[in-house]
Structures are given as structure tokens and as C-alpha cells.
Length: 270
Ligand SMILES: [Zn+2]
Image (cartoon, rainbow, N blue to C red):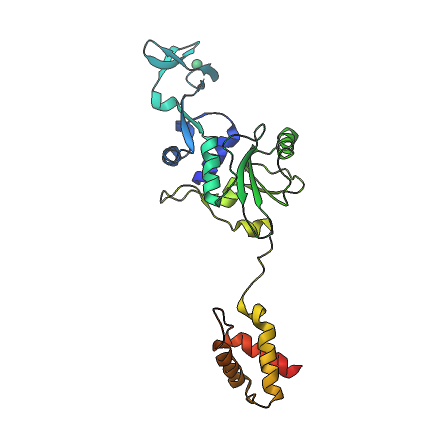
């Protein structure tokens, strides 16, 4: 089980859990150290398995020790490490997610109900708005989310992160925590494992390289050399000659030889 899976499991649980019940207490300690989990005292109840009929019993602190009362066995004491509990530090998680994706316009409290705005990520085609909702498993969760999003500025790109579940919502992309983040063992904390623009389908930014900007100028030069007979017969040597001339002009951007060769072919074809 990965650290993110463990974290998501606790978020989905929606309550504090005992560290002893976790499959990997070492990961839990690491999550605690990074502030993603926090100490939550001791669990509220235990299940007694020591008598004929398993029963739940509240944890009590009696005459200096933790324990519970069993109708058969009376007071049964519990070691503190058996019942020490953790829960998710949501404000910290939201903050770490915002760090992982380099967000602006962050918000450290829920925008409404259980919906958090992680923040905005800039792209050439508008901001990607990232939101977090712990669970998205039923219509109540979905309504809570829609209520919250209704209070936010309209956005073309919305990413909804949940710990568990992804009921489709119109106009949004849904992912679970484990699909986009990891918690590497080297201790760097929560990191992004995706190209956000790619999973959102944001188009790649238009290229603004030299070939497009200087295309007309290069074509004019090549055509003038054909017209006045100075063009060299070989496509390759002509491209080299043209590039040499271009490089004598103002920079700082110059096309590559391949690009110039393309223009030579085009001029000769047309
Ligand atoms: Zn019992």
C-alpha cells in the first residue's frame, strides 16, 4: 500500500483511526512528520474480542490507565500505543497540493461545505482551477460540490480531486488523489506525478520559434536568388548559403538548417 493510498483511505473514512489498525504504521509516521496526518488523541471505542460475543465498548480513562468495560471480564486495560489515533490534516493537505502544482489564488478554508479550492495554475489558454472534495460517492456529495462551485468564478478548466469516488460533474475533470500525486520515500513530501495540461486537455501553446516569424523573409530571399540566378543547384548547399546570409542579419533568433531546407524545397516546388 502506498502512502497516498493510506492517506486517501483515512480521508475516505472521514474520522480518526487508530495507528495500530493501519497496515503500515511507518508510512503513517512519515505522513505525520510532513503534517498530512495529525495526532488525534485516542480512538473513541474498541471492539472486545475477549469474550463470547464480540461487542463495541467506549474507551475510558480510569484510575490512571486506558481501558474499556466488558460485561464478562470487567475493566480491560489498553496500552496507549494500541489506541493512539490520527486523522487527516486537511488544511495542510490542501496547502501541500497547492505547492505540488504551483498554484496561485489558494484558499486555506473550504469555499463551502466540504469543497476546497486548491488554487489556479496558469496556462496560455486560461487558468486551470483545482478543487478538492474528500469523497464523491453519492448525490449528496455531488450536490455539496456543485453548491460550492456555483460560488466560484466560471472557468473553462476545472479539476476535481477526491480521495475516493468520482461521480461525473459537467464541465469538470475528475481524478483521485493517487492518480496525480505521490509521496516518495526520499522524504520530499507530496509531489505531482502528472502533466496537468495534458490530463485537462489544454492545447499545447502555439510555437513562436524563428521559422514562423522569419518565414516570409526567408522565402523572399530564396526566390530572389532563384530569380537572379545565384541559387546553388544542390538543395543542401543552397540552404547552407541562405542560412549564412540570414546569420549575417539581425538576431537573436535564427532558423535551423532543416527549416531553411524546407523553405528551399517549397520555393523550388512552387
Ligand atoms: Zn467483552
